[in-house]
Length: 618
Image (cartoon, rainbow, N blue to C red; front, side, top):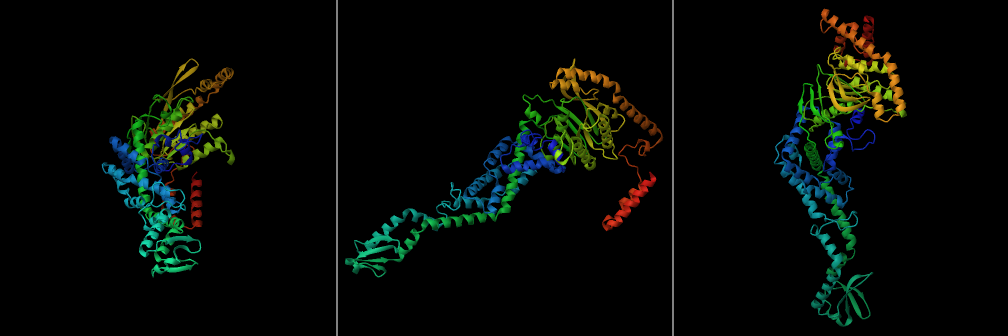
């Protein structure tokens, strides 16, 4: 499902509208993932829900099974918790910027995979079995890292001390030379004394000759043939042997050679892991998906969500629906649940009236969020839900301007309305709040009225719509247009005050209660009193009287024409602003055009000819 930026913003899917924070968004409610990969995947699911019924059902079945196996689900979450961000780690490895601690984090993550696979093998749902097949335990990479990299390495790859003892003979030798060089020289000295019988033989060192065997002239006759003379002194001779030379090479520069060799071995290990990048990415994706579904299952159980039914009939039937975010913000289960019923026939458009602060926006957004949650494969906050798949969710909620680009609040609103009317289909869900309020009362009412006519007409759009308004004159449309129904937010009046009941009931409100809401907001009493006086005077010229007359005229004409015309004929007197006349020959010619084989000039000439044909008929 494609969700445009304004709808994503208005529904507060991943961040709040004002503070731009995660807390207070749908993602905040659903995200109880244990890994960074799972959090990113869940965000993607929320921003791009599914429209394929089979895929949705697979996700719902996975969540249902996880909640039927609570111990297994919680164990999976425990094993997921230590897993680092494999996708980021393999990125660092591929770019050769990973350090030894990154590889240890990678190894720690791989250690969790075998027990996760064992738990998954006990589950039966197709999606979880699919995850099991994709989740490669990467045992060979774990064993390589376990043998090669020490548990607590330094951050830098140039400091050495990264490779475990026993992994490489040369590393062991250099490491021993660094710490045991003196004892090795003492052993050589003792061994040579015993072999030659030269009691005062010494192993010595200087910067010019390195290590050598020094023999005084009195024992020169005992020097064996394999000694190689290096230097002659006044009272002594200095010699070297192949063994001593090799030992010298090992001891001198052992630190430098050890560091270089460890870096070489570390790079080889890193490059080998990089060569398995496709396996690792596939496993990372499987871990992320498992994390998402265990998170959604945990949230569903904690918040008492139910599994929605998914249908292709276009029916949205929600009983006892709740706003997933608002109910988490309210203490003590104070949220008032409401029902919603929309379909493609007699219940396409619901006109919702009632005062500000009564809960209209919350009610409409919760409907959109429940539909979206169902299509991303999540359980939903309701007593029961039967959700018809929608191809798009459009919202026009709230007031905002875009001064940087020179757009007023009303212009922004009209741009969004234009986008909705041009891109929505009969399978879309529309959430429209206070259309037309940014201009004069007459203009605003006229625009809202025309928009409802366009949406409700099956020939033009026919989309399922929740339309909240303070123009209670629009309630006259019920009965004059097919598929339009009135609902209102129940309130209880106590003198000049009102109590919000937060309950959606059938019927329309005949008052907006604006002055009462202003009083609740703390507007000074003098202003409230003057407003009451003015509303009494202005009500004498109430446009609702004229709205009723217009609606009654439309109703009378519809009844009269229905007696003399067939249902599917077009009455030019009843054509609304957005209606079009059926010109069958023009439509037929358009449908038969082979556009792919037309030049741009041919296309323009054809369009000009058809346009003139229509003008002549009008």
